[in-house]
Image (tube, rainbow, N blue to C red; front, side):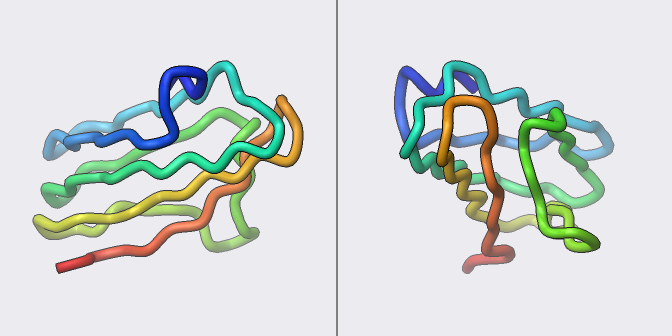
Length: 88
């Protein structure tokens, strides 16, 4: 996910697979939104530069649906993740 090209991205997950999301070219002060189209039993993983709440890592909705994952940058090296799951 090249953060220098846009602030809005869409990802279609594939059932039964893990998708590695590797944000690059992060700019300080940037907010990036990722629409995740879920399919059930798919997973995602991130590099250590993506920070998540302890004990509350993002797991995609396990049915067909839509999740919104937001990444917030305060510097050019880390992103902080928040998410809203199972939107109708």
